[in-house]
Length: 253
Image (cartoon, rainbow, N blue to C red):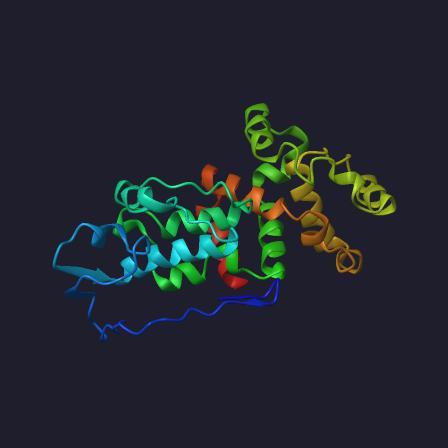
């Protein structure tokens, strides 16, 4: 894996007993193989031969992703409980703070092989997006009707958002921007509310109408948890499935 944001590289090795599926093949039936606690759920309880699929590799890869990002922890626990937990789909991601990374790992280690992502879907996950693409996503959401209506937002919506954003780096976002910039944008229309919807609309208008000012602001450094919080909330509300959002995201990839 290569992270463009952190310039880190990880190499996976020890593929001595690996097999490559030919084009058109989906399954390889072979003898039991693999290291204890690093086998997919569907292969653990087989006694002699078992069916290995690409989705089996995805689950194990998800375990490795968590192990690397968490500093050496296994999502299914340690010692004697590990394989039992894998077989029951019981996991914990408590050693991972990044919401987007959690979203990726949960998808990859899903106990149902049919619910796991493909390799292509894994690599397209927002965890691997560049900072520029993440900012682009925030701008897209800032153009949605909820953000456009930020000054008269539904109270229920604001309460739900606050559960995802309370105590985050952007909770008092106006104090993080240069005061003259906030005054410039506030002065054009009504004042932006100091909540997440107001911030998304502010970001959209900043990049749309004040490009020279926008390039001076590093949003990902200013609000390191903004993208993750907004992405997870938008996913749960179904915003990420909207045609307007999907089309704009894909055009930026």
